[in-house]
Image 1 (cartoon, rainbow, N blue to C red):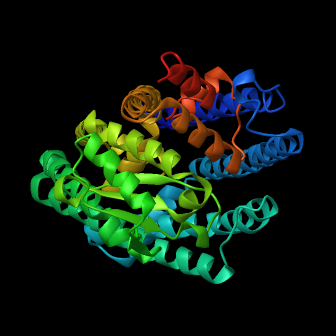
Image 2 (cartoon, rainbow, N blue to C red):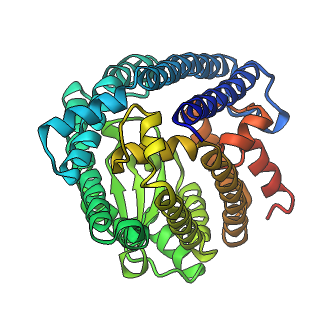
Length: 413
């Protein structure tokens, strides 16, 4: 296959993926004004539903604009051989292949961050502000941007640097060592994310003694779950939206509740949310997801190793010969269809896991409190309650609210 053929294959994959995504977005947007099904009639009154429809429509238009601009920029980079020019530039600065790749991706990361910055600012201080979600000051916004930039550079360069060293030491066998390193790194981050990363952005405090803590500890005992710690995160300093999650493994397991969740839900509803999260743990969903992620990463790295020395791939991007960074970009473009199919599979599996976790919560608590909690969270976040089925199939990691309610009501406790 010639470099020119590969180039147009890259373009074909990008255009096809973009067209599919935008078609699904359009189908979904057509359903924003659908009447609510009977099971969801109590979530919004007429005014609140109009507000939710407006919020979803504005976000659809904004996402259409930003994704279209990103798509056009990538096409322009390809047609004007910008990746090849950047490779030539960093090659003039240093003869070290290691530092060429580090600078190549460092520059792309910085440019991407700068391009996304005005859109992130508009999203936060115009759209989210308009609908009452934004609680973030401009000071916190800029601090977050700076911290994310430094953290992204540090972690990205750490992983990339390890990959480059493995490649220099072992050539095509680098994929195996890179896989083992990345698997270890992923497990480490999963274990210590709440302890190391979260405090850079948010304050975590143990849930104080009282009725809520007693209720959650009772739920843990009922489900035979060893609760090592319940923490409250100050999410309200950025957004009024609520959430809860598990973090870590073994002795490092932590339950993290957003302070907005505690404000919005009753103690019984929070207990139902905890039961759902415990259901994920009891069904080993976190472990399954980690294993799938590690296996997929290994597959990607192995496939990349097969083409890492291809001059043709580098030439398709405007380079003269194979380089680690050019061939990695080319591989990412070639991997687009496989990545899309993997996304469909992982979303399907995730939705299945959510049903199982809901069933666990129904068994050890009750269906009605979980339904009530889900309705309140959807109402507070102005969720789209009538998404198109194809859009759900392609993009949703959770079943729709209506699907979850129907499943919970099949044998409501």
